[in-house]
Length: 338
Figure 1 (tube, rainbow, N blue to C red):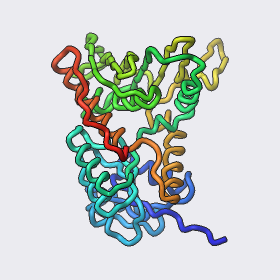
Figure 2 (cartoon, rainbow, N blue to C red):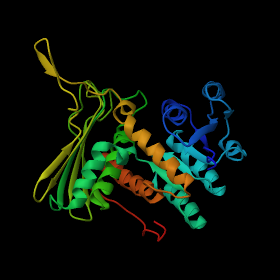
Figure 3 (cartoon, one colour):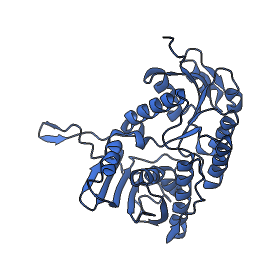
């Protein structure tokens, strides 16, 4: 049997996330190789490309996507640059894995959705990697059995050791709670209809003028209530936890008790320090699933509609943070393709 050629992937964005994906494609998963990397920083792109045999560095995404040795695209650039790269890929009918956010706002997400809809088939998978985390997958499977009854509430905790210097109060919702937005929709199979954001007094460890922590409340069209504690300067590590409260029981993930040690009068474990460490296996699983599906000519996983819905919820959340009160989420009618 003739072995199939690997999927040739162009990676757009070679920062922390993009460079890690290049490593993942080349060293961890199977069925793909990196044929091109793109970054506005030419030297950074060249440095990443130099570590991969047969990889070409570009500073312009459209030029890279026109190359004969590009079969698919992985977008890991900053959110504001996603729309142009997505539209360029869709114009060439190329499969795409786009890191979240799909785009930073629902209006631009709808433009991408419309471009994909005109093709008549899905091409875009959005990088909501929690759907590929072993604990979240187990929780999803349990809920689908119905053993616990209908979900009534979900409690989420999302903590970072420290926020990057560019982080704003709005970004706690648009960049961090975006993950809980997608997880809520996926776990419950419901759309989020309204958002309220409460503002506890800021932590003394938060940078000046950063509203951190925040307490976000979602309402869903299935009648569930979901809360998210987002605290991006907790100081001790990176934690993501979730508990679903159902009619006949509860289920909780994210306690991080895979190994507990006892030594020198102490017991305990370790706490991840960043998302790449905590969700390393999820990223591996996500990329392998994307490559496998793409080679079969399919698109699986969260798509353009999911990216658009998350953007709409986050937009409502930012309004709730800045204006106060309860803000309803505005969604267009879901097109048949999705």
